[in-house]
Length: 209
Ligand code: AMP
Image (cartoon, rainbow, N blue to C red; front, top):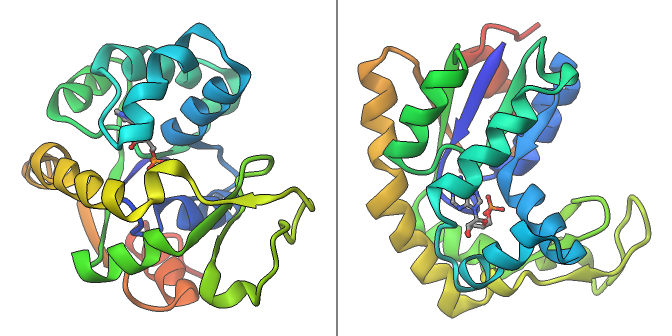
C-alpha cells in the first residue's frame, strides 16, 4: 500500500507514520528527517536545504522531488510505504504522480491553536527521530529510546512555528482538494489521543483488526 500522510506541522504525521509503518511492515519516508540528516552530515543537499529549513520555509520542489524519487526506487519500498511530509505543494504532487501510484492519502486534521502548543513544546532526538513533548518529559533531557540528547528544533521556536503554519495554509492545504478530487482522501481527527488516532488511520486504510 502506497500512502501519503498529509497535515499541518505538528499534526502527528511522524508519530503516526512510525506506528502505522510498524503495523503494516512498510518503510516511513520522511523528507524532513532525510533533510535534517543531510544537514547534520553537511552533504551538498543538506547545505542547500539548511537556510530554508531553519526559517520554516519549503525547500525548492526540485530538491525534494529528486530525494523522494531516489528513495522510492529502493528495494524496501517495493511493497509499499508511507510518505510523511511529502508532497507539500501541488507541483510536488504532480511530479509524484509521474513516478508513483498512490493508494490513499490520510489527512490528519488539527486546529492551529493546538498545533502551536504542540510544536513549541516539542523536543526531538536527532539520533533516532524520537519525538516528545515537554509536558510529559518531567524535566528529562535524554531520549528514552536511545539515550541521546533531546533538542528543540530551530524551526519549532515560536516565531518560526507561525510562519510554518502560514506556509502550510498557503502551499500545502490545497493538496486536500487535489487528492479529494482524485477520490483518495481519508480525513482523520488528529486532536484525539494518540492510540485512537492510530486506530482511526488504520481503519481508514482498511487495515484495522
Ligand atoms: P518536517 O519535519 O516534515 O516538519 O519538515 C521540516 C522542514 O523540512 C520543513 O519545514 C521544510 O523546510 C523541509 N521540508 C520537508 N519536507 C518538505 C517538502 N516536501 N517540500 C519542501 N520542504 C520540505
